[in-house]
Image (cartoon, rainbow, N blue to C red; front, side, top):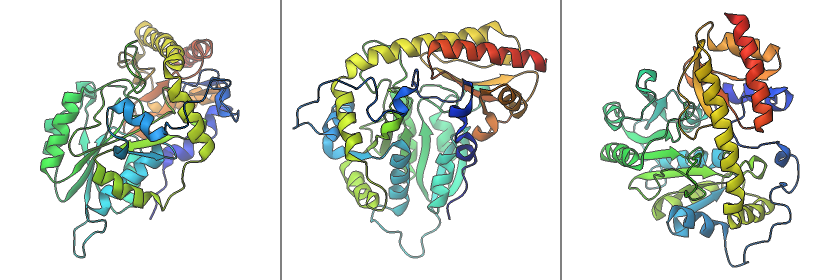
Length: 369
C-alpha cells in the first residue's frame, strides 16, 4: 500500500556523513540545533504567556482564526493528513462505487507528494512546470490537466526543487481552476518564508492561506532551521480542519516539549528571523555568484532562494552527484525531482561551510569537463 520513497531512502544519513553538505535545504547554520534538547537559539529566551496557544500564534501569522489551524508533527505529517483528508471525501468516507480519485501533482516535484496520495488510493496525474518557462506555475496549464474525479491538486511554493516563488494571485487563479473541477488545492509552503524582505512576517512570502478550496501546509523546519522540533501545521477552512482532526487521530501527535519550544520561537520571531534573513541573504549571494561565474552549469537562482535546480553541461545529474559524493560533497540528483539531467544544490549551512563546499563542487565540475 505504501510505496517506497526513493529520495528519502537515498538522503537518510548523508547530510551527517558528508564533509560538505549542499543537499540540506533548511537554514540550520552550524547545525547544532538538531542535536541539542533545546536549540541553542532558543536557550534562555522567555516563554510566551501561558494563555497563548501555538495554534493561536500560527493563526496570527496567517491572519486566520485558530479554528482554521491544525498543528501537526512536522510538515510531512501535515501533508499526509491533508492528503488523507482530501481523498477521504467531504463526507468523511468514500461512497461505494466511486471511481478512484485523481490527484494532480506538479512536475518536476518532490517525490513524497507523489507517493503519499498514491498510498491513500489516489490516481496520480501530472502537470508540467517547464524548465524553458523557468518552472512558472501556470493556472491554465493546471486547468488543462484536470481530468477524472479530481479530488486534489498539489503544488509547492516556493517550488521544490527550483525555488521559483508564485504570487498569491497566481495561487488564487490556480485554486479557482481546481475548485471548479470539484477539487482542492494543496500548497506546501515550507519554503515560502525564504524572503529577504525585512518587513515580511515570520512565515514570509505570498501565502495561499484563506483562499477558497485551499489547504496550506508549513513548518518551522526550513527557514527557521528548527528541524529537530518536528513542528508543522495545516491551514484550511473550518470544515476541512474538523475532518482533518479526525484523520489525525490515526497518526502520531506532536510532543509537548516541541509545542513549548515552538511557542517560544514564535514569541521571539523578530529576533530569530533577523539572523535567518542575514544567513539566507549571504548564502543566496554565494550560490548566485557560483552559478554566474561558471560556464559549465546553468539555471536560475531565484531572488531570496538558497537552493536551485541546476543543469551541468558536462554530465548528467547522477554523474555529477556521484562524483561529488566520492569527494565527500552532497548534492541531490535531479532524478529524484523528475529531471535526471539536473542537480539540486542547497546552501543551508554556515556561509563558511557553504563557500568551502561550493569551491569543492567547482573542482569536481572542473574534473568532469
